[in-house]
Length: 523
Figure (cartoon, rainbow, N blue to C red):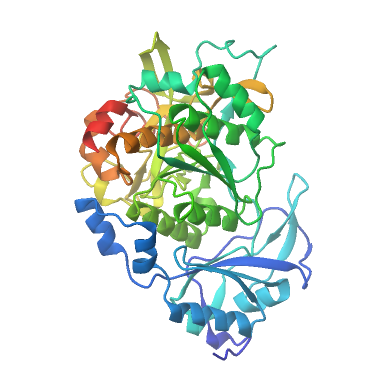
């Protein structure tokens, strides 16, 4: 294949690839010889629309091997990208037919020419430098409709962990906050069926921080539960690296999921906090033929406006693949109310929770007495300590919500996917007792709800002797398995807009809090 370099009439814009100029200060141009690695996402050999429709009608799923054979890459498309790489002096580092990804590496100069972009260095407020781009990505006409996304040209930080830590006062002992819970206590409060996750694997996506086995041993010994097997998988050079504030997220995720499903294997996929790193971690977990996770928990995200359209589309395609393979994906709905941390006077839904193929997890404030719920309302302490939720302005209202009264977006009347789907305790004042970097802490946030639901689904998989997978159709057809949350809202004072709790589904608590045993009976 021959390509006329730098000739505008031989190139096409990659749809949805436009990216705004970074808000950080430009420091210098990227060195032409700097090594840059990108993930190129390529179309499937055939559409999965019919398979997804059949999934929701009959529950038919595919093994990972069957999925690759049926919906992976075709050789002709791979050859086109290989030829393109050769023409631009880029090396093909890896090709995955199941993940529909090719990893290319080359100099910044050759990458810029290959994809029609200009790269610059920027310095963030914290002093860290990153590589940024603005505008569109282009590819040769031969790759039109073949390439669906290019990730890694820009490596600015992409997502934030969705946890909120209760600030300690004085000596912080494990029993100093009686209003908080050990996760295994919540299993009883929420009526989870008696099981331990035997035979299951929970994948956890982490974009920073790390875990210490000694701390995990201390924690599980304290609560009297066998410690689960915990493994690490490196994605794009990410590693288990304790020593930062993100440790709180990592330990929270492992300890919550492990407390609910201690006999499940927990695999932590460590990746850089970039658009490429996050996507590669998701596709690695979804298509992992070695560990074969049946549930994936994600506690990182950002407002939809902070993502490119190509990003949300490609992540969503990965979540579609998960659904077809019977893999449940749980994600935190956000911790900053209806604004989701964006100060533009508008409401914002958090992604990836807003994906129609992700179980979006919202937050409540829970009080209980002797294992029984006393009150449970929407979590809303302040503008930056409140459950996310609302209506997507990118994803249309899915079929499983067609009979649910989802309001249009209060911004622009878009009839989008409503979130969250489910809720559980997330207020740090009534949060989760965990152990992080040698100290006990109480942590909340919707990032605790995602691994809590992942642990529940591991129990359900064990008891059903199969993967319950994509549960959305089942739960929206059976809302009675949830305890409705009817009090509270996530309206922030910065917007004056948001969503109020009420009878039935709402944009701050979803369908409500799952009764574990009732949920088991309908899936």
